[in-house]
Image (cartoon, rainbow, N blue to C red):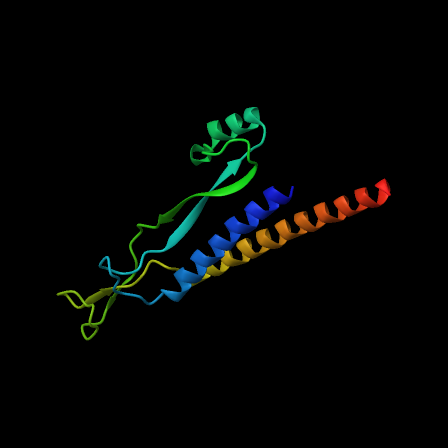
Length: 146
C-alpha cells in the first residue's frame, strides 16, 4: 500500500509541476524550438501486482502496458505536448508578429489548468490519506501483537 500510494504521489506531483509550467508560460510567444509555447500534459500507466488484472487493464487502456510488471501503483507513461493551435492576436508592434501582424499565443487555457490543478491536488490528498490509513493499520497490528 505504501508503494502504491507513494507512486501515485510522485505521479500527481509531476502533473502539478507540468500544470505550473503551463501557467508560467501562458504568455510565452517564442521558445527555443520556435513558435509559441505548447501546453504539456501527462499520461499515467497502471501497474498491477496481479498479471491477470494487468492484462485486463492493457486490453482496455492502450498506454497501460507496464514496462515493470508486478510493481503495483501508477507511473507516468509519457508527457505529451498539446498540438492544438493557440489564439492569434493582431499586434503588429509585437516582436514575434508574423508578416501579417499576428502573434500566436500559447494554447494554454487558465480555466482548464486551474481545474486540472484542483483535480491533481485532490488526488494527491486522497493518496496521502491512503498512506496515513495504511500507517494507522500497521501501528494497530503492532499494538495487537504486543
